Image (cartoon, rainbow, N blue to C red):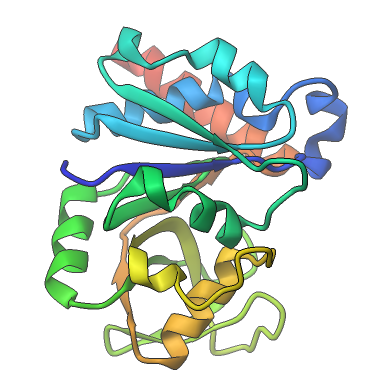
Amino acid sequence: MSLPVAILAGGRATRLQSITEGMPKSLVDVAGRPFAVRQIELLRDHGFTDMVFLVGHLGEMICDTLGDGIRWGVHVRYVFDGPRALGTGSAVGAALPDLGDSFFVLYGDSYLECDYAAIERAFVGSGKNGLMTVCKNDDRWDASNVLFADGRIARYDKEGRTPDMRHIDYGLGAFRRAAFSGYAEDEAFDLVRVYQDLLAHEDLVGFEVPGRFYEIGSPAGLDETRAYLARNESVAR
């Protein structure tokens, strides 16, 4: 893989408060290893070597645990939010000097087994400034928030959901640097807004991923991801 990956790991994990008191969500134990390690290993196995963790609350603990990534054969770097919490979009914007002209963005609570190489090819070949991965959800794993029809994203809205939305934001995006231009330097904004702005300018391509995502952002999702990875490792033995 040629593109770096930005991993959004600066949130306060309010839905996991009983588990994450004094610990960032990225370090929650998932079947014997911190979740961030699980993400690094998965990305490495798909050929990624350059990862940038975007950290905030208790971010020093993530740095201390992961170090420079050399033990996994990758290069790990860190960008901190600074004195105030940033939104997911402005956190990526602040990290642009470390990300280069094109990059992936992965939510820090997502475990995504997908064809990263095919997604990168689709993004590069699209000529667009952004790509959103989606999967057919039908409200199974979370509330669907994407209208995806005829191979394209027609609408994306986490608040104004409609019954014809059968897909969901899968948790992995690809962007060119230009996708984050036009926002004020001191403005806090979320990645949702970046996607919606790109969509409004017909500058966003969609990529449908078969299968499902796993996440640790909720207690139910954490339990499910733990069980899934433990089961996989048991079979591998």
